[in-house]
Image (cartoon, rainbow, N blue to C red; front, side):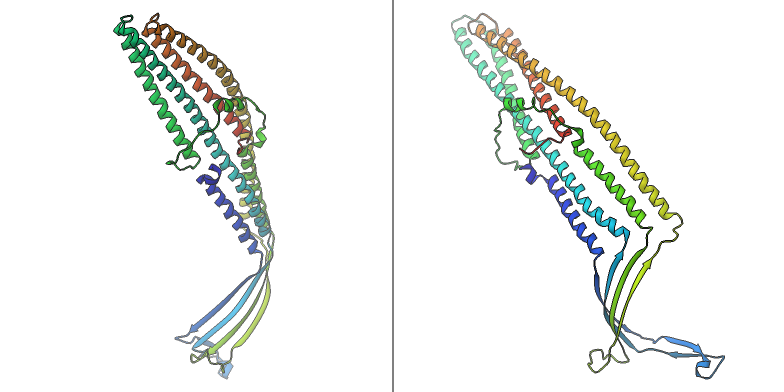
Length: 410
């Protein structure tokens, strides 16, 4: 659902569509360009021509006369065709490669969306488990209070014991309310990250224990698969294309053209009169542009492009070292989190056993409610630590999967 509806992915998909249109636009530069043009002129003052008087037998004088007609019009068609341009060849390659660059960017957006959704889903599952745990504690405490009331009514325990149990019950309900709120907020966050309607219901279907067990398997991977590294490597290729393009501008540019048009000259506006003559004109030719001297402009641009390539190389080296460090840190964090989860799992089992034994003793009046409350608080602390340990395992594994580009759509 997130892959199909997340706005971040839709935006990058539009970037790909735009890149594909850019390929068409660039390719069209090298194909025939045909255009039609029409012009009309009305001379309010006919231009004056000045010639030497010898033209009419009056040497040494200047003779002026008006040449032309009041109305001129022409219509024609022109075709231009690029024959050779090194920049065009490079531009066509760049536009095609850029679609690959954008495709990788889409994968990066998809990965980030899957990362956020996975984390939100895991948090929702943990919140659901924690809520169930708190619901159970409230039920146990209510049962304890009911049994203690029976003992109180026959005078076997004092009012202080009942008050202490009521305090424990209120504390349990407070924790239950907080757990319920955390669960609802986790579901809302999940809906938001997966672009799911906030006002619609959603149900979690995975078992937390099974999902947690999956995090302890398949830790293989390679940082060479990292999408951030792939994007940077493709950015370097784009910089190299830019360098080639600048170098290509040192080569000649050759293009051809063909033009056919009709011209009409009138002293009256009779252009639509079929008896009046239109004069045709046809011409074709070739344009050759040869770069000779640019006062250092092309040299400076070439050097700047070379610097950009070198900067990309350094950025790749830095990122590779950073990814190597991240790999070691995340693996260490995951190992530590797994060990801590095992310890906290044993700890919560022990805390639950101590608390259950305390409840049994309290039910028959062999342990006061103050001790029960202390052991309840101990159990809550153990539960909090266990929840944090689960999140540490999930987060470390998720970060490792992102590093190795292994966050896949299920």
